[in-house]
View (cartoon, one colour):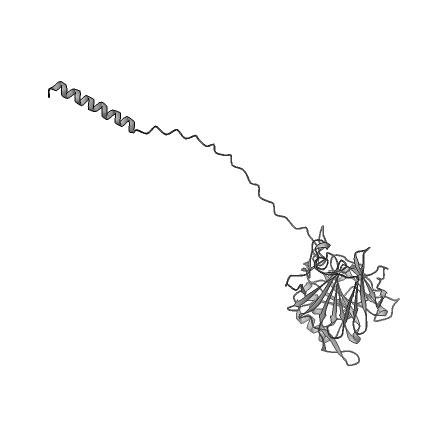
Length: 350
Protein backbone atom coordinates (compact mmCIF):
# COMPACT_ATOMS: atom_id res chain seq x y z
CA UNK A 1 0.00 0.00 0.00
CA UNK A 2 1.42 3.32 -0.98
CA UNK A 3 1.74 6.08 1.51
CA UNK A 4 -1.12 8.20 0.22
CA UNK A 5 -3.61 5.32 0.38
CA UNK A 6 -2.57 4.49 3.97
CA UNK A 7 -3.15 8.09 4.98
CA UNK A 8 -6.62 8.05 3.47
CA UNK A 9 -7.54 4.86 5.36
CA UNK A 10 -6.27 6.23 8.65
CA UNK A 11 -8.11 9.46 8.15
CA UNK A 12 -11.32 7.58 7.37
CA UNK A 13 -10.85 5.46 10.53
CA UNK A 14 -10.36 8.47 12.68
CA UNK A 15 -13.51 10.08 11.30
CA UNK A 16 -15.49 6.90 12.02
CA UNK A 17 -14.10 6.71 15.53
CA UNK A 18 -14.95 10.34 16.18
CA UNK A 19 -18.51 9.77 14.98
CA UNK A 20 -18.99 6.82 17.34
CA UNK A 21 -17.63 8.76 20.33
CA UNK A 22 -19.95 11.69 19.67
CA UNK A 23 -22.97 9.38 19.48
CA UNK A 24 -22.21 7.76 22.88
CA UNK A 25 -21.72 11.01 24.85
CA UNK A 26 -24.69 11.88 27.24
CA UNK A 27 -26.08 15.37 26.99
CA UNK A 28 -24.97 17.65 29.78
CA UNK A 29 -27.25 17.55 32.88
CA UNK A 30 -29.33 20.65 33.37
CA UNK A 31 -28.13 22.99 36.07
CA UNK A 32 -30.13 22.47 39.31
CA UNK A 33 -32.54 25.20 40.19
CA UNK A 34 -31.53 26.62 43.54
CA UNK A 35 -34.13 26.11 46.27
CA UNK A 36 -34.68 29.24 48.29
CA UNK A 37 -33.88 28.85 51.99
CA UNK A 38 -36.96 29.76 54.05
CA UNK A 39 -36.59 32.44 56.66
CA UNK A 40 -36.40 30.90 60.13
CA UNK A 41 -39.73 31.18 61.96
CA UNK A 42 -39.53 32.21 65.57
CA UNK A 43 -41.78 29.95 67.72
CA UNK A 44 -42.95 31.77 70.79
CA UNK A 45 -42.97 29.52 73.87
CA UNK A 46 -46.38 28.87 75.35
CA UNK A 47 -46.55 30.74 78.61
CA UNK A 48 -47.17 28.55 81.64
CA UNK A 49 -50.55 29.09 83.21
CA UNK A 50 -50.14 30.37 86.73
CA UNK A 51 -53.02 29.09 88.86
CA UNK A 52 -55.06 31.73 90.57
CA UNK A 53 -54.32 31.87 94.31
CA UNK A 54 -56.94 30.34 96.58
CA UNK A 55 -57.47 30.04 100.31
CA UNK A 56 -56.08 26.63 101.33
CA UNK A 57 -59.01 25.65 103.58
CA UNK A 58 -61.86 26.77 101.30
CA UNK A 59 -60.57 26.71 97.72
CA UNK A 60 -62.05 30.19 97.27
CA UNK A 61 -60.21 32.83 95.19
CA UNK A 62 -57.79 34.90 97.22
CA UNK A 63 -56.54 38.22 95.86
CA UNK A 64 -53.99 38.40 98.61
CA UNK A 65 -54.04 35.22 100.69
CA UNK A 66 -52.77 35.91 104.17
CA UNK A 67 -49.61 34.13 105.24
CA UNK A 68 -50.73 33.72 108.85
CA UNK A 69 -51.50 30.30 110.37
CA UNK A 70 -54.93 28.86 111.04
CA UNK A 71 -56.33 28.96 114.57
CA UNK A 72 -58.58 26.16 115.86
CA UNK A 73 -61.02 26.98 118.69
CA UNK A 74 -63.07 24.53 120.79
CA UNK A 75 -66.66 25.80 120.90
CA UNK A 76 -69.47 24.52 123.09
CA UNK A 77 -72.71 23.19 121.57
CA UNK A 78 -75.34 22.97 124.29
CA UNK A 79 -78.60 24.86 124.79
CA UNK A 80 -76.82 27.09 127.33
CA UNK A 81 -74.11 27.93 124.78
CA UNK A 82 -76.38 28.87 121.89
CA UNK A 83 -76.30 31.05 119.93
CA UNK A 84 -72.54 30.80 119.51
CA UNK A 85 -70.34 33.71 118.43
CA UNK A 86 -68.14 33.55 115.35
CA UNK A 87 -69.04 30.11 113.98
CA UNK A 88 -70.30 31.66 110.75
CA UNK A 89 -66.73 32.80 109.94
CA UNK A 90 -65.00 29.44 110.31
CA UNK A 91 -63.45 27.82 107.23
CA UNK A 92 -63.97 24.33 108.70
CA UNK A 93 -66.08 23.19 111.65
CA UNK A 94 -65.67 19.68 113.07
CA UNK A 95 -68.53 18.25 115.15
CA UNK A 96 -67.41 15.61 117.64
CA UNK A 97 -69.21 13.55 120.27
CA UNK A 98 -68.23 14.11 123.91
CA UNK A 99 -69.55 12.92 127.28
CA UNK A 100 -73.25 12.19 127.53
CA UNK A 101 -73.63 11.81 123.78
CA UNK A 102 -73.74 15.58 123.16
CA UNK A 103 -71.43 17.29 120.68
CA UNK A 104 -68.86 20.07 120.61
CA UNK A 105 -67.28 21.95 117.75
CA UNK A 106 -63.68 22.50 116.76
CA UNK A 107 -63.87 25.60 114.56
CA UNK A 108 -60.93 26.48 112.30
CA UNK A 109 -60.34 30.11 111.31
CA UNK A 110 -58.06 31.29 108.53
CA UNK A 111 -59.61 33.15 105.57
CA UNK A 112 -61.95 35.15 107.84
CA UNK A 113 -61.09 36.61 111.20
CA UNK A 114 -64.02 37.42 113.51
CA UNK A 115 -63.27 39.63 116.45
CA UNK A 116 -64.76 37.34 119.13
CA UNK A 117 -65.34 33.57 119.25
CA UNK A 118 -67.02 31.34 121.81
CA UNK A 119 -68.18 29.99 124.19
CA UNK A 120 -64.83 28.23 124.45
CA UNK A 121 -64.55 24.83 126.13
CA UNK A 122 -61.93 22.20 126.97
CA UNK A 123 -59.71 19.86 125.00
CA UNK A 124 -60.66 16.31 124.04
CA UNK A 125 -58.25 13.59 122.80
CA UNK A 126 -59.54 13.67 119.18
CA UNK A 127 -58.73 17.38 118.85
CA UNK A 128 -55.08 16.48 118.28
CA UNK A 129 -55.93 14.58 115.08
CA UNK A 130 -58.11 17.50 113.93
CA UNK A 131 -55.73 20.38 114.63
CA UNK A 132 -52.23 18.94 114.28
CA UNK A 133 -52.40 18.74 110.44
CA UNK A 134 -53.19 22.47 110.33
CA UNK A 135 -49.87 23.47 111.87
CA UNK A 136 -51.39 26.21 114.06
CA UNK A 137 -52.50 26.52 117.68
CA UNK A 138 -55.51 24.96 119.39
CA UNK A 139 -57.47 27.35 121.63
CA UNK A 140 -59.14 25.77 124.69
CA UNK A 141 -60.48 26.67 128.10
CA UNK A 142 -58.32 23.92 129.61
CA UNK A 143 -58.51 20.16 129.90
CA UNK A 144 -57.49 17.07 131.77
CA UNK A 145 -53.74 16.81 132.33
CA UNK A 146 -53.72 13.47 130.52
CA UNK A 147 -55.14 14.99 127.35
CA UNK A 148 -53.04 18.14 127.61
CA UNK A 149 -49.88 16.10 127.97
CA UNK A 150 -50.73 13.92 124.98
CA UNK A 151 -51.41 16.99 122.84
CA UNK A 152 -48.16 18.69 123.77
CA UNK A 153 -46.20 15.48 123.23
CA UNK A 154 -47.65 15.26 119.72
CA UNK A 155 -46.43 18.79 118.99
CA UNK A 156 -49.74 20.69 119.17
CA UNK A 157 -49.51 24.23 120.54
CA UNK A 158 -52.20 24.90 123.14
CA UNK A 159 -53.52 28.35 124.02
CA UNK A 160 -55.43 27.86 127.25
CA UNK A 161 -57.38 30.04 129.67
CA UNK A 162 -56.42 27.75 132.54
CA UNK A 163 -52.76 28.33 131.67
CA UNK A 164 -53.21 32.09 131.90
CA UNK A 165 -52.70 32.86 128.22
CA UNK A 166 -54.04 36.25 127.11
CA UNK A 167 -57.09 36.76 124.91
CA UNK A 168 -59.83 35.19 127.08
CA UNK A 169 -62.65 36.97 128.88
CA UNK A 170 -65.90 36.11 130.67
CA UNK A 171 -69.27 37.38 129.41
CA UNK A 172 -71.39 38.60 132.34
CA UNK A 173 -74.71 37.91 130.59
CA UNK A 174 -74.11 34.14 130.76
CA UNK A 175 -73.35 31.71 133.54
CA UNK A 176 -70.07 29.82 133.83
CA UNK A 177 -68.82 27.63 132.30
CA UNK A 178 -70.81 28.72 129.25
CA UNK A 179 -69.50 32.28 129.20
CA UNK A 180 -65.83 32.04 128.22
CA UNK A 181 -65.00 33.93 125.02
CA UNK A 182 -61.83 34.98 123.27
CA UNK A 183 -60.38 37.60 120.96
CA UNK A 184 -59.11 35.83 117.86
CA UNK A 185 -56.49 38.45 116.97
CA UNK A 186 -54.83 37.94 120.37
CA UNK A 187 -54.76 34.20 119.85
CA UNK A 188 -53.20 34.68 116.44
CA UNK A 189 -50.46 36.87 117.93
CA UNK A 190 -49.45 33.98 120.19
CA UNK A 191 -49.18 31.43 117.38
CA UNK A 192 -45.76 29.85 117.21
CA UNK A 193 -46.27 28.93 113.55
CA UNK A 194 -45.90 31.63 110.91
CA UNK A 195 -47.02 29.76 107.78
CA UNK A 196 -50.52 29.28 106.37
CA UNK A 197 -52.10 25.84 106.81
CA UNK A 198 -51.75 23.19 104.12
CA UNK A 199 -54.85 22.16 102.20
CA UNK A 200 -57.06 19.78 104.18
CA UNK A 201 -59.42 18.83 101.33
CA UNK A 202 -59.37 18.83 97.53
CA UNK A 203 -61.55 21.47 95.89
CA UNK A 204 -63.00 21.77 92.40
CA UNK A 205 -62.48 25.03 90.54
CA UNK A 206 -66.23 25.49 90.14
CA UNK A 207 -69.29 24.19 91.98
CA UNK A 208 -70.43 22.28 88.88
CA UNK A 209 -67.17 20.30 88.85
CA UNK A 210 -67.44 19.16 92.47
CA UNK A 211 -67.84 15.41 92.92
CA UNK A 212 -71.31 15.42 94.50
CA UNK A 213 -73.13 17.39 91.75
CA UNK A 214 -71.05 15.69 89.03
CA UNK A 215 -71.34 12.06 90.16
CA UNK A 216 -73.88 11.96 93.00
CA UNK A 217 -77.60 12.02 93.55
CA UNK A 218 -79.90 14.98 94.31
CA UNK A 219 -80.63 15.50 98.01
CA UNK A 220 -82.55 18.15 99.90
CA UNK A 221 -82.05 17.20 103.55
CA UNK A 222 -79.57 15.37 105.76
CA UNK A 223 -80.77 14.15 109.15
CA UNK A 224 -78.11 13.00 111.64
CA UNK A 225 -78.46 11.56 115.11
CA UNK A 226 -75.87 11.42 117.85
CA UNK A 227 -76.91 9.75 121.12
CA UNK A 228 -78.13 13.04 122.64
CA UNK A 229 -78.50 15.48 119.76
CA UNK A 230 -79.97 15.50 116.26
CA UNK A 231 -78.46 18.05 113.88
CA UNK A 232 -79.77 18.47 110.37
CA UNK A 233 -78.82 20.14 107.10
CA UNK A 234 -81.26 21.45 104.48
CA UNK A 235 -80.23 22.59 101.00
CA UNK A 236 -81.28 26.18 100.36
CA UNK A 237 -81.50 27.14 96.68
CA UNK A 238 -81.55 30.88 97.39
CA UNK A 239 -78.31 31.01 99.34
CA UNK A 240 -76.86 27.91 97.60
CA UNK A 241 -75.78 26.57 100.97
CA UNK A 242 -76.64 23.80 103.40
CA UNK A 243 -78.39 25.40 106.38
CA UNK A 244 -78.07 23.86 109.83
CA UNK A 245 -80.66 23.08 112.47
CA UNK A 246 -80.67 21.44 115.88
CA UNK A 247 -83.55 18.96 116.06
CA UNK A 248 -85.51 21.08 113.61
CA UNK A 249 -84.70 24.44 115.21
CA UNK A 250 -82.67 26.74 112.97
CA UNK A 251 -79.07 27.16 114.14
CA UNK A 252 -78.37 30.86 114.40
CA UNK A 253 -75.24 32.81 115.26
CA UNK A 254 -75.17 35.45 117.96
CA UNK A 255 -75.23 38.02 115.14
CA UNK A 256 -78.50 36.56 113.84
CA UNK A 257 -77.07 34.71 110.83
CA UNK A 258 -78.38 31.25 109.94
CA UNK A 259 -75.38 28.91 110.16
CA UNK A 260 -74.64 27.26 106.86
CA UNK A 261 -71.93 25.79 104.68
CA UNK A 262 -71.13 24.81 101.10
CA UNK A 263 -70.02 21.28 102.00
CA UNK A 264 -71.10 18.73 104.60
CA UNK A 265 -68.69 15.81 105.02
CA UNK A 266 -70.03 12.94 107.13
CA UNK A 267 -67.58 10.25 108.15
CA UNK A 268 -68.38 7.14 110.15
CA UNK A 269 -65.92 6.85 113.03
CA UNK A 270 -65.17 4.48 115.86
CA UNK A 271 -65.72 5.70 119.44
CA UNK A 272 -63.63 4.17 122.20
CA UNK A 273 -63.26 4.76 125.94
CA UNK A 274 -60.25 6.94 126.67
CA UNK A 275 -58.16 6.74 129.83
CA UNK A 276 -59.69 10.00 131.03
CA UNK A 277 -62.69 10.17 133.36
CA UNK A 278 -65.49 12.71 133.63
CA UNK A 279 -66.79 14.16 136.91
CA UNK A 280 -69.06 11.12 137.42
CA UNK A 281 -66.16 8.73 136.95
CA UNK A 282 -67.23 7.60 133.48
CA UNK A 283 -64.73 7.15 130.68
CA UNK A 284 -64.42 10.14 128.36
CA UNK A 285 -65.31 9.01 124.82
CA UNK A 286 -62.59 9.34 122.22
CA UNK A 287 -63.13 9.47 118.47
CA UNK A 288 -60.50 7.37 116.70
CA UNK A 289 -59.02 9.80 114.18
CA UNK A 290 -56.89 7.34 112.22
CA UNK A 291 -57.89 4.42 110.04
CA UNK A 292 -60.62 4.35 107.40
CA UNK A 293 -64.35 4.04 106.96
CA UNK A 294 -67.48 5.03 105.07
CA UNK A 295 -68.25 8.64 104.22
CA UNK A 296 -70.91 10.77 102.56
CA UNK A 297 -70.17 14.13 100.93
CA UNK A 298 -72.88 16.73 100.29
CA UNK A 299 -72.34 19.70 97.97
CA UNK A 300 -74.68 21.81 95.82
CA UNK A 301 -77.84 19.91 96.74
CA UNK A 302 -76.33 16.50 95.93
CA UNK A 303 -74.63 13.71 97.87
CA UNK A 304 -72.04 11.17 96.83
CA UNK A 305 -70.89 8.08 98.73
CA UNK A 306 -67.21 7.90 99.55
CA UNK A 307 -64.62 6.45 101.88
CA UNK A 308 -62.23 8.22 104.22
CA UNK A 309 -58.80 7.40 105.49
CA UNK A 310 -56.27 9.04 107.77
CA UNK A 311 -52.93 7.31 108.07
CA UNK A 312 -51.65 9.28 111.08
CA UNK A 313 -52.77 12.08 113.37
CA UNK A 314 -50.32 14.44 111.61
CA UNK A 315 -51.87 13.93 108.17
CA UNK A 316 -55.07 15.44 106.79
CA UNK A 317 -58.20 13.43 106.12
CA UNK A 318 -58.38 11.92 102.62
CA UNK A 319 -61.80 11.35 101.05
CA UNK A 320 -62.01 9.11 97.97
CA UNK A 321 -64.63 7.68 95.63
CA UNK A 322 -65.10 4.00 94.74
CA UNK A 323 -62.30 4.23 92.14
CA UNK A 324 -59.81 5.65 94.59
CA UNK A 325 -60.03 9.16 93.13
CA UNK A 326 -60.01 12.01 95.62
CA UNK A 327 -63.40 13.62 96.16
CA UNK A 328 -63.58 17.27 95.09
CA UNK A 329 -65.53 19.63 97.31
CA UNK A 330 -67.30 22.76 96.14
CA UNK A 331 -65.32 25.94 96.83
CA UNK A 332 -66.40 27.30 100.20
CA UNK A 333 -66.65 26.30 103.84
CA UNK A 334 -66.96 22.75 105.17
CA UNK A 335 -68.58 21.14 108.22
CA UNK A 336 -67.25 17.70 109.11
CA UNK A 337 -69.57 15.43 111.06
CA UNK A 338 -67.70 12.76 113.07
CA UNK A 339 -70.69 10.43 113.25
CA UNK A 340 -70.32 7.35 115.49
CA UNK A 341 -70.44 4.17 113.44
CA UNK A 342 -72.16 2.15 116.15
CA UNK A 343 -74.56 4.66 117.69
CA UNK A 344 -75.16 7.37 115.12
CA UNK A 345 -77.86 7.61 112.47
CA UNK A 346 -78.03 9.22 109.05
CA UNK A 347 -80.99 9.73 106.72
CA UNK A 348 -80.80 11.43 103.33
CA UNK A 349 -84.10 12.86 102.11
CA UNK A 350 -84.85 14.13 98.61
